[in-house]
Length: 574
Image (cartoon, rainbow, N blue to C red; front, side, top):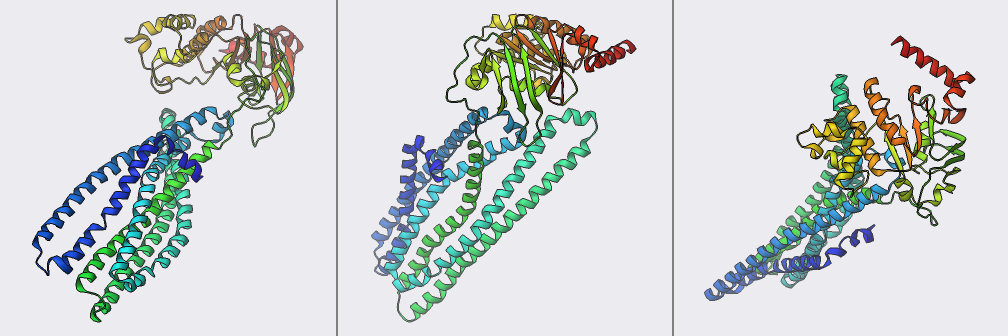
């Protein structure tokens, strides 16, 4: 882990070198005050060397000015290094998140992921900046203080430093407890952010069902968990600080008693004793810095571990011999496919299915039967280990995922639109397309006329998830996106099921236009939308139970016929 952490310093090694050099100078300058003080008390003042008093006083002032400038450099450039390292880590995490499979997002909430990318990495950047500086300055200061104190009085110095092992033992014992407590605290923060993200995203549903109390109860549960976790971490931190502070305070007691005895027995001069008391702060200051650094270290290490957990999650990867698929015709073949989501029972059971290029193939049946799973397996969103799926005779494991997905367009019931302009959302289908191509895609999706009624036209920002648009407008915008992509394979997964009948008829016209010349897989509960499909498959419990055209299936009098008659009866009653 340390090696991976250090690797993030490499792009900033020049500035890091100067930062450490400045820290080294600052640590070295700290010794001048007690040294000059000792000379003042032992020589300059008793012997009335006023020129030396003024000269060395001015020298000390100059050194403090230099130190102030170096402190500014360390604080500014050091933090910039930390921020840049944080930005590099965030970029690495984001790029890795883009490569993770669907299954990862099925198991991890957005809010928890965001916590790792924001607050966790902020703690890491603080460690990246302050860690090396504190270690360098404190270590050098302790060594310099020890050497200088020995020059004043060796035995008094050895007595003081005899307390150091006790401090080290206490730190080692309590550090592990702090680390575990801070890890639990981090997890509780992620839980809160996950609940908060979910509640805010669903605020309209909460208001519609007047369930603010329910959401508050869920949030308070996580909030109490956070308080409990923080209590444990602060308890561990309190024990750590109180114990180490007690030991450092004992240092002062020992200095007072031992120094008084040495002074009484003429084993040390008054000026040397005064310089010793001043100089001991050169030791206690760095020790206290290192003690405070332990908390920061635990925060930073915990954050970096959580960062690495994401980076070490196995990404989607093409097989070694996978190649791009150049020109897709649209033949799709499922051969003995069995699939179940991680940790769950199988959703598909030995499924074999043939979809010819250019045909419209409908999947119908009860919810949970496996229709959407079939749609997700075609673009290789999930990895099939039992059975094979072929596109134009090539097994999808032999096709790079990028080239495969570039040839597949998906229109789903739950349309996701970005909080940007209408133009940007359509361009998502093919970044780099011209304005004319965007407008043409919008016209074919029957949304251009509506866009032109808006004050800012295609530059209109539509809000988070397209909240400023109606359901039909959002669906047409997603259809325009696929028109721009122009894929040879099209998947319509309940594309109109959330719309009213009038809007559905309008959207269906756009979909009919979109389906022309493409292999189209349609998932639908409303059977009226799939009557004209070339083939219809009834999917139930992960198996194809019926297959044929609309007329063939109705004549057969099976499950499809029963569903159709039921819906037809409901339509008549309406």
